[in-house]
Amino acid sequence: MQAKDLLNGSVSKTFFRYLVPAIMANLVTSIYVLADTIIIGKGIGTLAMAALNIILPLFNIFFGVGLLFGVGGSVLMSIARGRGDSKLGECYFTLSMILTAVTSLLLTVILWIFLEPIVQFLGATDLTMPYISNYAPYVILGLSAFAFSSLLQTFVRNDGAPKLAMIAVISGGILNVILDIIFVFPLEWGMAGAAIASVLGSICTVCILLLHFFTKRNGLKFSLESFSLFRIREIFQNGATSFLVEITSGIVMFIFNIEILKYAGDIGISMYGVICNTAIIATCLCNGINQAAQPILSTNYGAGQVNRIERIRKLGIKTALYICSIPAIIGLIVPNLFTYIFLNPSEEILAMSPTAIRIYFLGLFVMGINMFAVGYFQSTVKPHLSLLICLLRGCVLSILFVAILAPLFGIVGIWSSVPLAEFITLLIAIYFMRKHTKEAHA
Image (tube, rainbow, N blue to C red; front, top):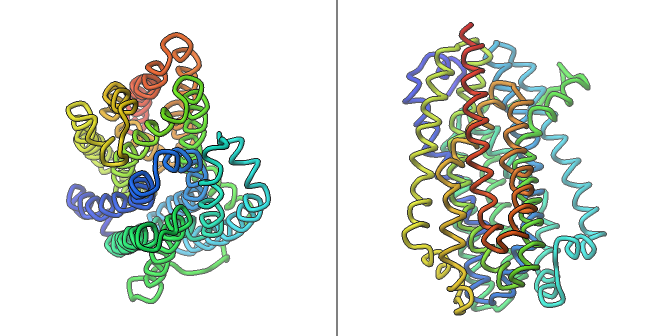
């Protein structure tokens, strides 16, 4: 779909044309982690599940690198196209590719050298360390595949090929699941097998996305004709929020792991693993909504189409509310369903599960709106507001409430921290979206 279609076509039809592939792709993206979690929890055991939850923050870094340069560059590329400056758009794409390659290489070297102290810092114990040692090296070597998967999905979708992005991610996800089952069960490769399956699935996704460059619809060209150091700064500034969405998730997971160890031990971390991995589904749904709206918002922002931007914003908020309510309601009604999906639960875990999931899942009702607000301000080049909302919901308020509530209410206080952070962030997000709308129409 060309820029003129994003500027002139039906807003709702265009949005839903992007929405379905984006949501499908993001749901399958969650399989990369969920398949590992289910198969590890069922096939290897509870301690292996705890080990996976300790190392999950590294995945946030891997995917965050791709989103930092992918969203940062693709938003600016779409805005440049909306203004009719294709050469500038090509420059943003080229710089994003280079920055991803360099950053991935540096991180791979750092993580490989300092792996043991890093995972010990993240909360590894004598019981979980053997499982981590069998899993982490393979995913570190696959860092570039995870990063370029995130990067290329974003640019290919912005270049008018949302279906190819969906096919690429679904294909990689299916391969990941098949290999997970084969490597862990018949071949008995354990944690190493689960890690290798994830890496190969991501490589498959990247290979399919690269096919876009050989199609007639491809508009992604390599060019540094409009290069300046300022362009790099712009990419970092506009992509910082997407990166921080991933990184703050990892930071909160780390803080929660440490606090949960104090109050509930490794069993509590296994329960938190169930919650986190179930919440990944809701997060991926929100990401799909943002990815559907972003090319339309950015292109219309570049062209100064204020009314179309307003209509997309309303569509995005309604869609986020409706879609995220589904997993929230399921969690409230049948909380143990998710526990049985991921684990062969003990009586201890089953006693903890209903309260933990019901409290935590209250936040899902508004999480989608908050995440859409982050994407909305990012797509309309308001990085300071996007960053503010991202940090409030993703890190600052959650950690603050954990520090206050855990000593007062123990493990229940920890479960309550995230929903409280989401509801307070919602009020702030609504205020700034209304203010932004009034300024745009002034």
